[in-house]
Length: 409
Length: 151
Image (tube, rainbow over all chains, first blue to last red; front, side, top):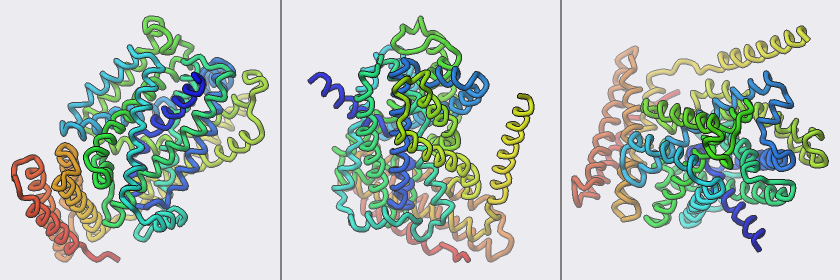
């Protein structure tokens, strides 16, 4: 019974923790401009993150070591260093976007200027990382994030023309008035949002934090293979709400406040309040994960003592790295830069950096020295290779598409 | 080993050059006054529609004051950006100047209507939801009429 509850909790937190500011914004923007014609990208992205997250979780559970420790050992300090530099910068950008996202979500609850929320939000993130147990932190934010199911409820309550939504989802082409380069730009952005690199760093390091072994491989698979796809369904629901309410009247989504209006229209203040709780939880949870990932990657690469399972005094440089990363995020946000713009750039640059994250994981997961009998099977490798090609294509196309389309303007 | 490293470096430089050339080749052409005004007015129309929805939701008791106020404040941010992009234009002829001026006027009308809507949402103009909504709709119509024809 305890085991079943553990699996259920893991799945629920995986659903609730799946969405972050990048998913929220990108799906709403795409829904308002392209309807559900890019829903297929969410499906492709979710399958991809499932393939690589379960791979990195398995590596951590079998070897007892997290991704970056092994990447450095396996690829050598130079290649791993280049990998670290790229991944760390993207992670920092994502952390900045998430802290900005918390401030924007709190503005929806309070009407108080987001800049006034940035410092308290970053302080709260630090405090939780410093004081709260890993499992409590993960479960509370994940479970509160589950209230984002309200987007799926809202979509049903809006009473859309399901035939029209299905037609959009199966059209695989931009609607009238939008052109192909912009369509592909947003396809890359959605893919980057679904496969954000920090998710695998956090997943593999979290497995070590929670002392997973091969016995927990089943639970790890269930979390990923059930939780993430259901999180993907919520992504599509967000796009669906925007497609139903905004697409017909030509509204272009450019702020978090717009994303919640269809929810208010469908479910009134009760559903709206639940969604705001979910937005705060999702962005706060993702800020915790990205802040931790900044500490994990640097500490694992440099061989420092790391992990929340250690007292902060015994992992001082790990904690210092996270504090510095949070201070940088606060510094950037206090320049009055638009957090939504940072989010939009972070998902595109995530797409650029994807090969840096996923190629080493695929290599390590095939190394018998680390994995023994738990190396990738043929099916996983086939998926891994196909995704490597997709990831490479998205990475190469991201910058030219961004320039050609004026970042999707 | 050294030649392998050289080859790798050449490959990386080659790839980077390819990306830059591709990016350069695909840079968009300069836009005309009409296209820039049209883009700005589309943002203005989107802002007006967002404001109408936010006002309706608050009037019907389906949204909180904080959410409506935030949505309207964000809308003003969008309008400010749209007005800025038109204001920075240097029209090459009187015809283009007329397009620019019409665009500015229409966006100004939306900005005024959204400002009024925000005052209403904050309780500054009690009991005038219908008038606030009518002003926003009129502003949205003005934007549509100011929309220039583009090739």
